[in-house]
Amino acid sequence: MEELGELVAVLLGLHAALGLHWFPRGAYVFRAFFGAGSRVIPASAAWGSDRMALFFGAPLPGAGRFHLVELFPLSLGREAILAHVAQDPNPGGRTPKSGRLATWDDARGARAETRDVYLGRAPLVTVGSEALAAHVVRMLRRLSPLEPAERARELESIQLRALDEALVRERADAWVREARRLRWPAIATFAFLFLVLPLVGVTLGLSLAWPWLLAVAIALQAWSAVAFFRAHRRLEPAERGERARRTFTVALSPLEALRGAEILGRDLLAGFHPLAVGAVLLSRADFERFAERVLRDALHPIPPTCPSDDPRSIATEREARERLVRALELAARRAGLPADLATRAPAGDSDERSYCPRCLRTYLLEAGTCPECWDLPLAPLERARAVVA
Ligand SMILES: [Zn+2]
Image 1: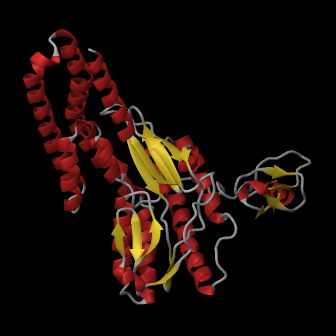
Image 2: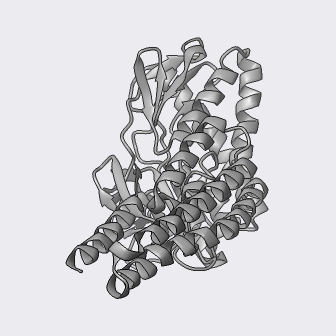
């Protein structure tokens, strides 16, 4: 009996451990434990280091959702590629990157090794998912042979697509349909592992019942694997290699089978900007708060915006940042957000003279910098009040 208790405890522990995800700190998790009401959680709110964070998915199969959405990790310019991005609305600050500058000729041989993107022998950037690494590599290879003017146009349309909430909704809805189908084998497997197995062990004894239990376990695994394979094919028709690999693990491990919908959902929205995902998954009040943070950070990024003095790096960073700001402003207008959401000044006390346009802290100082935002220059509060009046 003791062994049985230990077995169930080990299975529960493994199930919890498999629900643990790690990802870079410039990422956001959109998570719901039950139903549709998602919350957005910045990576800096989770355990981890200054580069990586850890997060749990929903513990019960068939409940909730878990999507990992990262900020795009590179500044792409018409002439060059910079492994650094100024914008990072995450309260924990900017995720450190290599700052490497590469040419578009280098990008011809871009390749992904799990979560690392390589140009030549040296890694360019590490991201939080294989899906995003593959997405970045496809994009670099496609843009590499283009003329600069054509590349600039392509980059503009790629940016708009990353912020297209209609595309996010389409994909999120498709996932919900697949998650509903995957729920049944997962619930059955969960009940088998954590209810039937201990009950049979206590009453009949495992030594007597094991042939029946094994038969049921095999049937459940087959059901889970077939359901997962079909769902993956509908959601990611092009990803054959990944489908085979994932289906194999789901077929072999009952604990993986419990997380079929989570496996499909984790990187479902990897190619999109978190703002577009927020527009679809968050309540209106939560979305407005989130959007304000994203927009203020985009307009007033943490200084310095570029890690190097090299003029090509500076130009590449600036081009990518300005393109993102344009696309964010368009998306904000489309979402019906207040026009002054990211530019209005806080009320402040009568003796306060300045405020931080990024985090909205108010200060008695006439002028200065915000220590919470890595010494971003403050904006005068008086003038802002006068404008409002
Ligand atoms: Zn600040």
